[in-house]
Image (cartoon, rainbow, N blue to C red; front, side, top):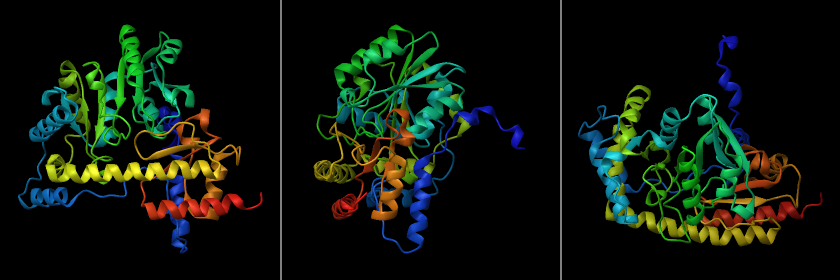
Length: 389
């Protein structure tokens, strides 16, 4: 059987973060108390109004398959959300509800990525993005991007690295692992350059609701041909519910519907009916309070890490991550993260997963944890770093 495995598997690397989580779980099983700053998951769960909506859907027997495009009422609710929060007219007919942002990315890559074609993305970036491209036998072409470019692609990079084999770009704003967004002016130029070359632009906006330093913004305001990925996981605190959405040009909706019918049938009916409650005034008030709490944590953790000697060359403006330069302490971020786990009891993630450019010198820390735990993590890290080498 082993010899029958598809060759594409060779291009998909293990998710090292999850291996680190296994190590953490083993320590916790021995009674160790760990502070988790590893996994990118809100420490808040869905508000009660959303849970109640799920319970009502089950009690009412609304458990059947839905349309592959999603429950019409939810598509309309997302459309209204774009109108109310961003002032954008995004017809519900362009919105496809998916089984999480992962399914949205899978559908987008299935529809747009040809075998052997390249998709440009920054290094560092979320590892699964390049693996979705590889799953459809495309080639993720990582372009090293440092703090001077906010760890994002620039228009100049796109133009310099575009070849006859390039099909498009896959961006994330705000980004995992860096928490940085692409400047609007730069994004305008990138989209124009890609369009001029006949390519596609996919923008992952799953952290869009968690942007702290500028008014709410979506790339949909720049061009109707941009493919947008979004999710109920982060801002809406519904990670395990596995619900997301795509916004695509109207002309390709039937093609994506066909793919969704065959690959997924439909997203979870219960999660969809529950998600309708996310857009209620009660839920939105809760989400905005939680967003303010994430910003408060960011404003604590970044100066605290800098005071310890970590480099944070770019203030993260969104998501709940700090991408920190640890080269003052080590030239092996992977070994450093494991030592911090074992000796300090703090879970952080090495740059290894996010691309070779920053693999050895950066670590990602998530501040999706209570302020009390973040403060304790800084105490533990200070003690750890004070130990003689």
